[in-house]
Amino acid sequence: QAIEMIPYCKGFDAILENKATKNLAMDLKSLAPNGRIAIVGAKESVTIDPRFLIRTEGYITGVKMSDISRTQWKEYTEAITSGMVDGWVKPVIAREYSMEEIQLAHEHLMQKHGHHGKLILKIL
Image (cartoon, rainbow, N blue to C red; front, side):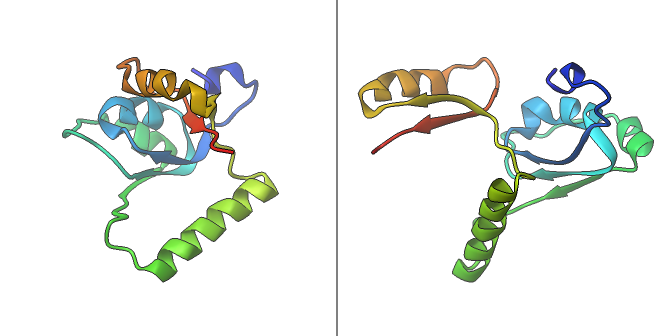
């Protein structure tokens, strides 16, 4: 939906997907030419329409984070942080919560209404 609101947007070059079971079909429709989808989470199997991959000549890959070394974790963290500083990584933040709102944050997290951005808990 967000991509339809951006005039002249060609699609996303990269998508990090942590709910592939729910979102992969929309991810494929939102992919830019030669775009990539990295799946980091899925609860169940999912069926896709390969025509969207053919149209964009896109790529899908799986990412298993549980087996990476500390060195790799540090490299990935530094790359993402650098991307945020430089502006090419733009996380979507749905809402920020204070510690006093922790119960509300948990309720929001447990809602089954889909994923619309990160929920941030401010601990300072």
